[in-house]
Image 1 (spheres, rainbow, N blue to C red):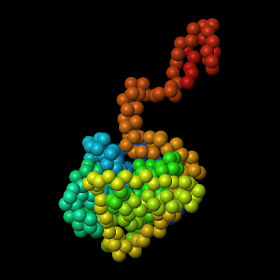
Image 2 (image 1 turned 90 degrees about the vertical axis):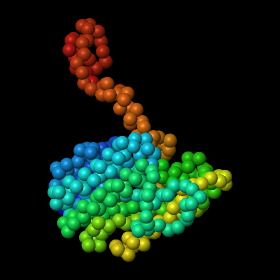
Image 3 (image 1 turned 45 degrees about the vertical axis):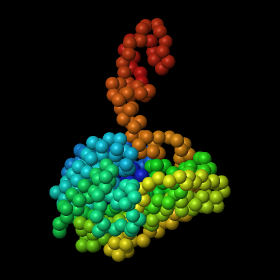
Image 4 (image 1 turned 30 degrees about the vertical axis):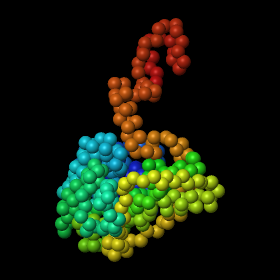
Length: 372
């Protein structure tokens, strides 16, 4: 296979995925807006081709020499989707469809689309029953994030033919360490709270179910799809999970793992009642089609996460860059503030008039001295 284009390759999943592709010997082009800067991708930037661009501007030049596309770009959770519904629809639906259409038009044979198990979230209500949902389950999501992903998924898979193999993965809630770290995911948030507060808050008894998977297993599944027989995956949707867990179980296991590492952790369980979202998902279809089995256990992931957080210095736990919605809000506010200036403190080089005889640090006396 030729080069692989990774849309969103500098994000939480993207950083791990790119390293997996490089380790497998693939040539990689990363297409990303770099909302979180270059630093998360610093370990591989000298080994990839980087295109800093918006998905909404995607065209043939970005993909014409590639053998596959993996799209993990766009907005990635409910809060960011609800913060800007218009951008959510543009990125998660229309731009994602555009990427697939352009790839198909220029002859790219394979396309992997990152969808979400949030599609199965039926919300809350007395009529919501606890049952295992699979790819054949009738879905009718209400939230902006899930509806945008489902719309893109259906349109992209409809493009399948004997020359173009799109596949969609409905991934569970991801956990695990990434150089573009996030603390707004349930397991990661538990680890963060344990390390920073020594306490885990478990709401409503923690009885709700969630499908989960480690980020390394997500990356591995995407690479498996690239290498799979097209007839096994063409036009298909697969659930991508490592298992289904109750929140209470997650808290107890995180507590035990970190206690073994010398971190004292208390549980603060709130047993008040309210209707909460809860859903379980089957991963059997992917296991049967490609033989996929998760390799990273919760225990291995949490231990690795705790050690890497310390090694990378990601202990400024309240910084907004670890929380997608907080970072997006900050970026939007910053754009409004600096749009009239184009900079904050690092002023571009300008020519200023310095009166004769006056001294300025770094400047000679005279007129028209350039500083900056």
